[in-house]
Image 1: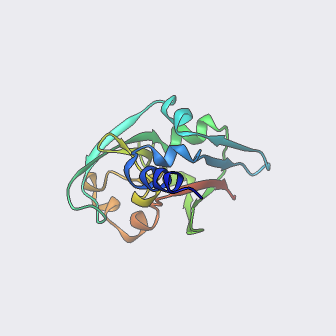
Image 2: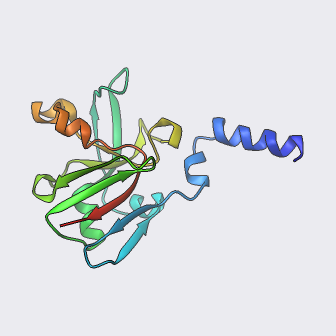
Length: 157
């Protein structure tokens, strides 16, 4: 392999803010009926957006997260059920009762402080809650449901 190709790959991986998009990251949503739909970051951007500023246990300072509410995303995917499984790229998975998904929270964040999140920085998709808004969002349950590097949403019940 030529040195210039290797150098270009390293530059892209570490210095291009949209590197997570360059690999065509998609968020897959599967319904109980076996049907699946995939959303690119552009697809998510086309849905109604929401944002909030909050502190997290994973960041040093308050962060502005923006993206689409999980509720709106599931509605756009036309899936329903009682339990949602959220799975990360590393196969970490956690279940969430659909009844606990609010209209505005959690969101599937696509940006942190206005920047697309690369995989190495919890992106490109991260389920986040407005942790500072209520003590219930600062719980082990909410933290466990804050799936970063989200790759799959499956309705399992």
